[in-house]
Amino acid sequence: MPTAPTILETQRLILRPMQADDFSALFEIFTDPKVMACFGIGPFTPDQMQGWLQRNLNHQEEFGYGLFSVIRKADGKLIGDCGLEEMELDDRHIAELGYDFRSDAWHQGYATEAACAVREYAFRELGLPALVSLIRVGNAASQRVAERVGMHNAATIERYGNSYYQYAMENPGR
Image (cartoon, rainbow, N blue to C red; front, side, top):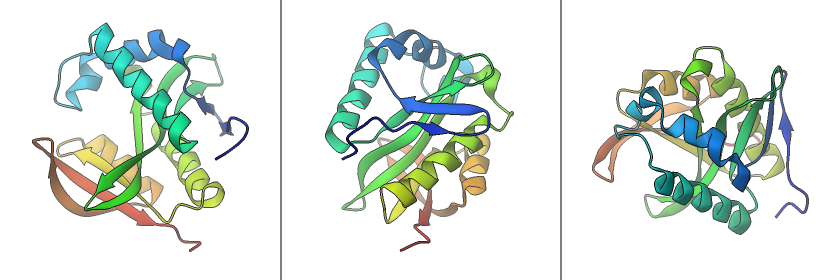
């Protein structure tokens, strides 16, 4: 586990560990109907948002990594999250690379920029053997991000009653 909080930086973004006081900025994202349409569910309630945030903070504590809050350098605004979540898939543990962004930050390359930084961190710093991204069928924008990161569509799976594309990539350094 890293001893100091990991902060990633790209040309336009700072990715820092998620914090409890990110609640309001994240709540704006997860109450945006455009964002939530990607999940096929309605906007989060405050309790759902708190549960989601706490689950991610607990994940960070347990694994030493998790979702980063993505801050736009130009204005210091939290515009999304991007990071890694340990999950069980096909009877094995693997890290999922995930990302969620404000709809007014879409189509500007932020998700790809953040996801590439997290991919590098996962492979070079953490030495993870592989990554997956589960993308709800029909979410073409997230598919494009996964492809730009270097992932390929490995399968279509059912999970929690929904169909997902399972994008995957192996660590090229292993």
